[in-house]
Structures are given as structure tokens and as C-alpha cells.
Image (cartoon, rainbow, N blue to C red):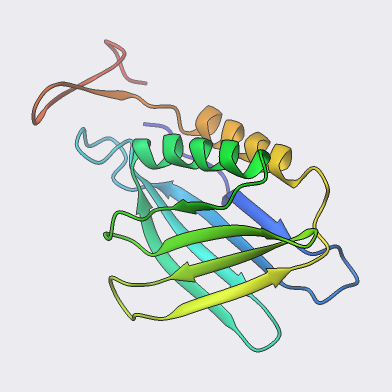
Length: 163
């Protein structure tokens, strides 16, 4: 069974060092249920908001299709459109709105607390979308999909042998 050495970011949005210090990230903590077919490819994560008066962490479990949805959201953002991610109602949702050279990021924790936090990030890297795509690629490399659903509610390992 594989394990990772440390937490990695799937999303890492922060203002340039020396500014307000605001940031929003999604940290991957590891596999949700490593070695168990029905939970192995799910990722145990947390959404983290850091701002002047708000420091919040929202636990979230990501499914493989959530990573595909994040890739689609990045395509929208790359073309200057707003995007919503994780809007299934089972987890906190995130929305991203380009705004006057910056980015507004909102996290809405509908399933648990009902809290919404919006963080304006005004001084982000001009290549921020490409940086987020690189993070997504890294997460997929470290946590490759190893389970396939062969029919409804029937799963098997993609590889015949597991190390």
C-alpha cells in the first residue's frame, strides 16, 4: 500500500508575499481509505482560508470526478470566466470570480455550518491558472486512480498486483 510523506496542495492561491497575506488552499492529506477498494481513490483534504480576521479549515473528501471537475473549472478560469467547484451539496463549495486583475474566492459550507467566506486576492501571479494546473498534475501523479468500477457497486484494482 502506498503512502505519502507530506501534505500537498491541490489549490494554492495566495497574494504576493509582502501584501495582505490572504490565501485560499486545498490541501491533500492522503487517501481517504487506503487499500480499501471503495474508498482508496477518494482523497482526504481540507480547504484552508487565511485572511486578516478569518482563519478557517473545512474538511472535504474528494472523489476522482472532483479532480476532473477542477480541471474543467480551470479551463473556464483560463478563459476569464467565473467557475464554481464542488457544488454537489455533499461538501463545501468553492467559487472563483476574476475581478479587476485579481480573484474573488468564496467558500460556502452549506452541508455543515452554512458559513460563507469570500476572500479577495488582488495581487496573484499572472500565471496562477497554469500554477494550479501544475498542482493538479502533481496530485494525480502522487495519487493515481488505482480502482475501477466494473459495474454498479463492483470494483477491482486497475493493476493485477498491489505493492
